[in-house]
Image (cartoon, rainbow, N blue to C red):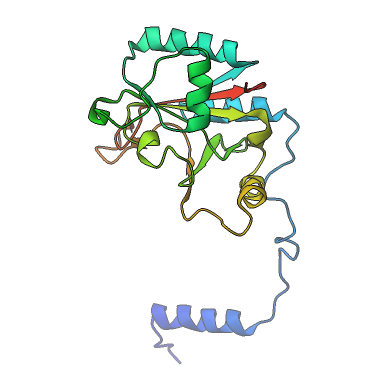
Amino acid sequence: MRDNTTAKEQMLKKIRKALLEKRENPYPNLEESPLYKNNTDELEVLFAEQLAAVSGNFIFCEDGIDFIENMLQLADRFKWRKIYCWEPELQDFLAKYEFPFYQTDKDFEQAEVGVTLCEALIARNGSVMVSNESAAGRRLSIFPHHHIVIARTSQLVLDLKDGFQLLKNKYGNQIPSMISNITGPSRTADIEKTLVLGAHGPKELFVFLIDDFS
C-alpha cells in the first residue's frame, strides 16, 4: 500500500517519536563544568593581552611619578589641551603633581580627554567595570574622544563575579543602579560591515594600573 504521508508529516512523526523516547543526558555535569580553562598567567599579563585584543592600551605604573611621566608623553603625542577630571580623589592626585586639568564641566563640548577611576578591572576579557556612583558620572567616560582610566592593583580581578564581589564589599546593600563594562574603545560595524572605532564614544581607551597610588 502506498504511503500518502507528506515529508512534513513524516518529519513531525519522527520528532514526536524522539520526544517520547527516554534518553540519558549526554552532559550530566554541564552546570558544574568550568566555563573557562584555568588561568595560569598573572592577572596583569592576562588583562593587558585581552585589552590589547580589543584595541585598548594598557600602561603599568609603579607610582604617581611614573604615571605623570606617561601622561605627559600622551598629552604631547595627541596634543591634548582639554583634559577633564571630576573625581575629588583624582583631582587631588593630579594637583599634587601640578598636572593641568578642568575640574568643572565648563566648555565640556570641547573636551578631548576624560580621566576617571573605575570599580574593577576584569582580566578575563580586558574590561573596565564602572558605575554611576562615581563622581565622574556617565558623561566623562563617554563624550571625550579619549578615555583614561586609573586603577589600583587591588581592583584587578579575574572574572566578572569577582568584580561584583568588589562592588558588594564596597557598597553593601546599596549597589549602584547602573553598572557597566567598558571593553575597548567604542566601535561599530553597522556600515558595510567595516569596523569603525569611536563611533558612539571614545576612540581611544588608556588603562593605567598603578601599583602605589599616592
